[in-house]
Each structure stands twice: as structure tokens, then as C-alpha cells.
Image 1 (cartoon, helix red, strand yellow):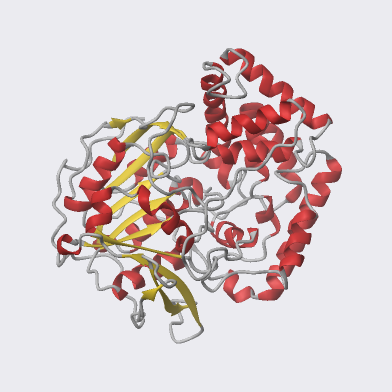
Image 2 (cartoon, one colour):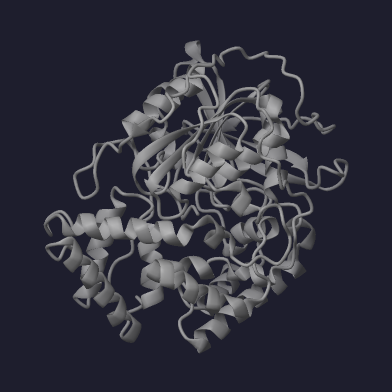
Length: 523
């Protein structure tokens, strides 16, 4: 798809008091008061709590709390303003993931912007969706269903029953909250946070799910957009089922094409692994074709004989999730696959170290992401259609098709639809242009979704990351960082058609980038 050049190459954004007509009116809601203090003693990050209405249509009713984190600009004499960051999900806790990934932002952005993130409503340390009375209850529920996805009639029945049980528990606990954790609600929260720090316009970076949040904000508050980078995009039409609540034929992820892009990325992993030696990729069988055959044989073996707790479906889920971060994810994944090939129980990837914040390991149960996704994005409501969808997806995307089909089966019986959803249009002219970043081999959000986002927004430029993994932020490219940094600082867009490459190809030693790594999985 060819994206028309919609904008000029350079737009200056440094003016902070631009008067732009149009857009959504400022809600008649009190601006949150943010009382910043060090997150923990000696921390470089500051924390605060914001109070916002549960329902913006009833601002005098129930309020909820948002956990917020900030790292001040490191060169305060040249500070431009505040950059707001959403790490994706839905369900990503910004208070954890922004500190973990802070060093991945371009140096000049860290110097000149305070960087703020938050746990969106329903998530983590904010007023959170939690459908269990205790951690043991949550663990028991998780153990009641197959890891990854169900295989066979018995596992399918148990999987469907588990998510029906989850829906029942959630409806009993806080049904009002379930109806008010939509992307639109969070976009309104973001505008309240913008107001709370005194910014007249929003500077924002959203990755993965954070792109649909950014696109929603840009169309609710088009006159407030100063600069916006959307990295690893969700096609708004796919997210909203083309603004239709009719019973959808496909799931959110199948509409997006997550199954196809995961299969294509896995094929690249096996091709590149087979093109090098076992010293660089432990799973290599000496050629791309032999390595692909080896992978297929391993999957067949695991179907019949799991290795310890490593089932076929659990391994497929681990493979897809491990493709998100190339360094060290791809090398570590190759090692696990080789262990399983040799009949050894593989060690899962270690989690990144917890950041210095008050609650570095908040409860992040599946119901938190589900509350946003299922309430926001239409999915088939009959649990019995998912097996047929799985087989159709497997025909076009093999194992990855099975994983991505069942990823949203819980939505089939979810008890709530969001009270406030933005369904379009997506082309309201923004005060300044948006920069859309897409990666060609992304296991979750296809490059075609970035093309669609750039086309649907009124004023956007597409920057291509000809690389691998989920989000260019987490899979470093100095070229991407140069363009995003310049855009954030003075509004200069990359020339139309610009393509960047990653700094380090897969299965070679990465350059040091400081601390990093995602907590959990962004989808």
C-alpha cells in the first residue's frame, strides 16, 4: 500500500501556547492535583496519584485513582515539556514499564522532556479490575485451563468454562468499573493528566495498544496534539470492527492479522537461525529449510509427549511472546527450543529487574487486559465458533493462528460492554501531524496496520522499521531514534518513504543500550 504524502517535512512545534480552534471541549472536571514525591527513597523517579471521575458523563459521581510516575528532564535548562508514554497491552502498567524502559528513549528526549507514564484505569496500581478474593484463587483459576490455548475437545470445554467462570466472578466484584475502563475513558484521563502538569498541548508516545489510545485521543482532542509517535500500530477499523457491533465474523486479532504476522516473523526467526551456526543460534539445523523442519518436528513431538510442563500449546505461546524482543529474546528462545528438542526441561526467560517504585509487582491478572479489550472491541459471542476459527487461522498461519485465535475467547462471555467507546471517524485534522512507526516483521501488530493507521489519520507520516520484533522502541534502531527525537523536539518529520534498519541483526551480539526489557507481554 502506498501512503500519500499528507504533510510537509517540517513543522515547528516548540511554541507551547498555540491557539487552535476546534476539537473536543474541555470537560467540566476539576484538574487533578499531582503531589509528586520520590517513588522510593533515593529513586530518580517521582510518583503521584491522580483522582479522576469513573464516568466522565457523571463527573460528580464516583472517583477512581491513577498511579502516575515521572522522570524529570535530565537537562532542565533546555526542557521543552512533558512526554506522556503508554506501554501497550491493554493492561501494561506504565509505572513499572516506563522506568524499566526509560534508557530506550532517545537521549535528547530524556534530556529535554519530563517523561510521564501511568497505570491506566483498571490496571496495576491504579483502581484495578481484580476478580479474585486472593492470589491463591487467581492461581487456581489460571491452573484450571490449558496454557497457551486448548488442544482437543476436553481442553476446549475446560478453557471455555474457565472464562465463563472468570466473567461471572468479574460481574460480581465490580460491574460498574468494568463498564468504565474503555480506551475512550483512558484518553480522557490522559487529557486530565496533560492539564494537571500544565501543558497546553499533548506530546505522546504510545506503543502497541498505546497506538489505538493515541489515535482515540487525537480524534477526541485534535486541537491538543503537539506531537504523537504511534509505534507498532493497531488498525482502528480492525479494533472497532469497522464501527459495527454486529456479531463479528472474526476476532480482534484475526481482523488485525496478528496470526499472519506472527507466522511470518517466526519464519524469519527460523530462516535466520538456520542461516547461522549453533554458536549463534542453538536451534540451528544448518540451513533454513532444515531448521523449519526441525521446528515442525518439535511441535509434533510436544503434541504427543510434553517435556515437563512444556506442552505443545504452552510452547507455541512462549515462542510467539519471545519473538517480541530480539535481544536477548530470540537467542534465549533458540536455547529453550534446543533444550526441548533434546528432551530437557527449558528454563523460562528471566523477568527484568523490578524498578524502584512503591509497587514494582502489582497484580496484573488476565481480567485487567480483558476488561479493556472485551469491553471495547467486538469479538464473536458464541464460544463454540472459536474452534472453527482456529482451524481456519491455522490453515493460513499454522501454530501462530491457533494461539492468536484463542487469545480473546474470554471475550465471548465477557459480561460488560464499555459505556463510552469512540468508533470513529479517525480523520479529524490534528493541530500537528502524527508520526506512525511500523516494523516489517512484528509478531503481534502487522506492518499493514501501521500503513492503515497512517492512511486513516488526517495528518500522518509513516516511518518504516525494516526489522524484527514488537515495537521499534524496545528493539533499538538509532535511525528510528534519530527521527523520533527530532520530531519530538522541533516537529521535523522524516521524508516520505523513509526506511530504517535495526542496530543489530538477530543472532549477533547487541550493542549495550542501558537497562531495558518489558514486564509481561504487550499485545
